[in-house]
Image (tube, rainbow, N blue to C red; front, top):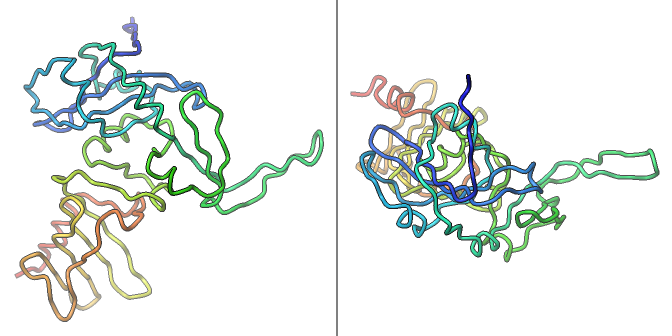
Amino acid sequence: MTKRIVTKIGDIFSAELDEHSKCYFQYIANDLSQLNSSVVRVFDTHYPIGATPKMEEIVVDKVAFYAHTMLRPGIQDGAWQKVGKSNNLGLAALQQVLFVTTQAFKTLISGPTQVALIPVDPHENWYIWHINEEHKAVGKLSRKDIGHIEPSAVYSYISIIDRMRYGFYHESNIVYDVIMRIPRPDVDIYVRKDMQKEGYVHYLHFHGAKAIREMFIFPKCTIRLSTKEPNVDGRLLYNKLFGEVNWRHEDFISMEDFEAKWNEDCQ
């Protein structure tokens, strides 16, 4: 018989990020305006696997991000486990957070039975809300709003743990046209862009927000740049911050894929 899973507001969960570290989050609310999903606050500190911090120590940590998710699949699949509880929910801070989403269509109602979807620019069709409030159409996001927004969807445990590890969601998200992806300072990120018009494939290795290695792969040659060799054949090592580009989900590659290309025919 399947074990009954009971979760209550205030529950604290631990999620292993790799064989060395783990991260904690707390279930703090339900949001009726977002499919009645669970709202969690994820804490910033990454602890060693063997650490056993006190619950009240965990909940006063800096909040890395807030998110909507479903707790049950993560418990069932062993992605996270309940480790304790606290009545400190940080709800005052949560009320300052604006969740945002956008749509590429608007609904036009022209009669009792006549409804049409009109294509619009999603950059000018944003909706914002605090938890358990109606979604408010705002058109473009204001500078005031941008300082408090969180991308909103009901994220899978895979996406939540990705953001714990890296500091951002990997999936394509128009929100990152407006705010920057901010990686954790100690994380390594690998991306690949097929620059067909320019005739090369572009690879980048970021450590935190800064590029530390770069490759241009042309049909007949490969140019490699790094912090040790930042200037090769007139090309300079990429100097934009990672978050200045809204990377698409398909741009992200594994360390193994990057290293295979970096070491290919490399003397």
